[in-house]
Amino acid sequence: MQPQELAEKIAKGESPAVVDVRTGFEFKAGHIPGAIHAPVWKILLKLVTLPRDRQTELVVLCELGPRAVMGKVLLGLFGYRNVSLLTGHMAAWRRLGLPLE
Image (cartoon, rainbow, N blue to C red; front, side, top):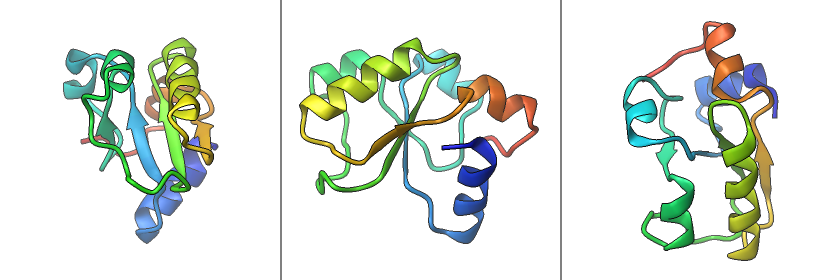
């Protein structure tokens, strides 16, 4: 999903679940409004609360991409079927000056 498209969905209250797989330090430094903080290791060990409905639309991101790909694969293994990556990840989100919490 493109950053601008996600920002528009958030503004309309129609946002998919945003899954941020970055570290706690990165997440606290600024994240997409409403994002679920779910580092890859927490997804792997099932230590994060994710939507119960496995058909829920999820958008996964990290800083540059590699961790998000791992997160997407793990979510797929756990039965989530509607998972996409945020194009350009947080680097692109910040570059476009989109809102942060």
